Structure formats: structure tokens, C-alpha cells
Amino acid sequence: MVFESFLIWSNGFITSFGYLGLFVISIIGTATILFPFPVDAIIFASGGFLNPILSGIIAGVGSAIGELTSYYMGRAGRKVVSIKRKKKKEFSKAEKLFHKYGFWAIPIFAFTPLPMDIIGLVCGGIKYNVKKFFIGSLIGKIPRTLILTIAGSYAIPWALDLAKMFAGI
Image 1 (cartoon, rainbow, N blue to C red):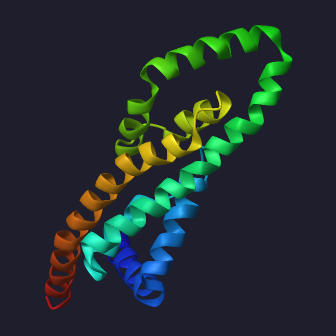
Image 2 (cartoon, rainbow, N blue to C red):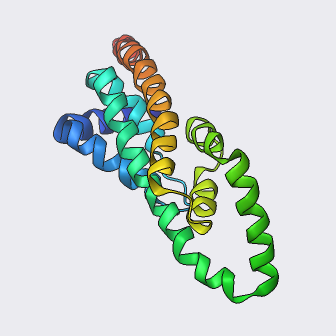
């Protein structure tokens, strides 16, 4: 019942707003800092109603743009951290470690369900290059959203057929 309601809602949303709606919802969904938003479910469903490859790329770019929110929050928070000398020393250690291993942490966190917001906050806080952060986010987000949309392109039509079959019983 809940899944069927979600299918009806997602079909209405995606057919009404199309690729632009998917792009905007991807930005909003990843711009929320440490607040869960079911953007992956919407991206997954979009694959069943739109071109899954194009949907995956659009959602990936939108998601990477949304991640810039945590980056700029970290950038703003750096001033707060620099007030306390002890915290500044700890932040300096994190900065050194991130400069040594950092770039590949961005795509890994962007691709997996790990908390990407934390990486964004750290990158912003250490004034990591915003272009590199964005590129790292793209490298992780586009394959992630492509997998979701391609999976949705197979699962959504199957689920709709299954729902029709059970409705006919």
C-alpha cells in the first residue's frame, strides 16, 4: 500500500516537473545538512519514468551542487573554530591529513551512503579548493545516481505491472 502510494506520487511528480524537477529536488535533497531527505528514492523512481541515463547525470550534477552547501557552512564555521586555540590545533591536524589523503575521500563519501555532509564541512573548514571538492563530488555522485536510475528503470515498470496484476485479483 505504501509502495503503491509512493509509485503514484513519484509518477505524478516526475511527469509534472520532469528533468528540471529532478535537478531541483537533487539540489535540495543534498543541500540539507545532517537532515535526512528521501532524494535517493525520488532519483530511483525517476529512472522508471524518464530516460535513466539522462536522469542519472542530471541528478548527479544536482546532487553535487547541493553538496556545496555543507562546504560553505564549513567555510563559515572556520571562523568559529579559529577563536578557540585548542580547536584550531585539532583543525590544523585534520587539515594536514586531508591534504595528504583528502581528494579520494570526497568521491568515496559521495558514492556511498557515508555522511557526505561531514566531508563538505571539513573541506570548507580547511579551505580546500572548492573546484576540487565539486569535481570529487561529481565523480562520486554521477555513478551513484546512474546506478539508482538504471535500477529504477527496471524495478518501477516491474512493480507497476505487479501492482496491476494484484489489483486484478
